[in-house]
Length: 475
Image (tube, rainbow, N blue to C red; front, side):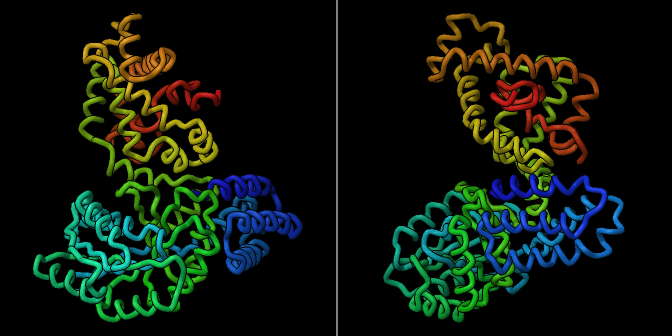
């Protein structure tokens, strides 16, 4: 998300970073470029106008002229105004009501409401330790009811059954009664969507809202529809007392205009971003972190949080002890590292959160690093335990057997072995205290919160098949 905007803004702002003095003329030129970049990213025109005006007012004032480094101060202003435009800080769900807290989801058909219900249920269950009931009041699409039942089973939420011949209000009230009886904390109600905003849909959803009085009314919107996303959000906001927005398919939108516009137009905060199809691909929306990412400053806090949740600390600790004792780093260890990286959303996801690595993340995506890592895992899986422990055993006939079993080429296997050799050499250098320092704290992630690359992240010695730091093809 935001790749186009990030690329354009970083190039534009780079021109003013080193300037010893900012004049009306160069501020004007820079703001013209920023304005173009925002419009190309599909940010709504009123939002762009307000943003540019706020930055201009601050940039020509005392704040910049008295700064030691006016260029950097200007970028700081752009960042803080971007944060203000998106809503200052993350706004969590307000579930501090008499249980069960009811969360109602609204939005157009195809926006990803049903999947978002399951994602939110998983988020509340795992991160907030809530007992969650989910129910579908979409009586027009029997497939939606079945889909939610399947997803509820996948995320471990309690599914309350419904049928197309029932009334939405009766379905929702039945689910709330069921939740009370079973001491559930939250009920998430999925509602019917339409292909466009119509009076019938609005009337039905208003009646449902009045009947169940939800603690949260979340509008689910598809980031891919750009300007239309903002218009639709406004229509729903006029009809319903929305409390927040879930922006879905954000990983598929390279522009990001909807994320920058929705808050300004509706006055309602974006509470979550849907970043993929998997049921765990829902992240709280932090305006400050998003602004930092757009301006190429990375998002280390999100990366650290992901590491704390997803890195297997036992495996990381085991590897620390093994390497510290001077034992050999084998192919089993390499496979563990590749899996840890996949658990954190893959190489591209990690790189774009590191300061100054936005362009490398795009290159990694173009080179399809995720696919390459999966190929490496498949090759390692095709080996015997003895071969994984000692790659020196791999002669010609063993290599042929492994490549046939994994559906790969000899070149793929040789590339893997070369990368493993580089990593093993690096690990050898780190025996003693170096490795422990690198992996201490969060099972290998940014040792103690400062510096160092994760063993579950970019592998020591660089990317598989790369030139000691960059992915293959970027040497």
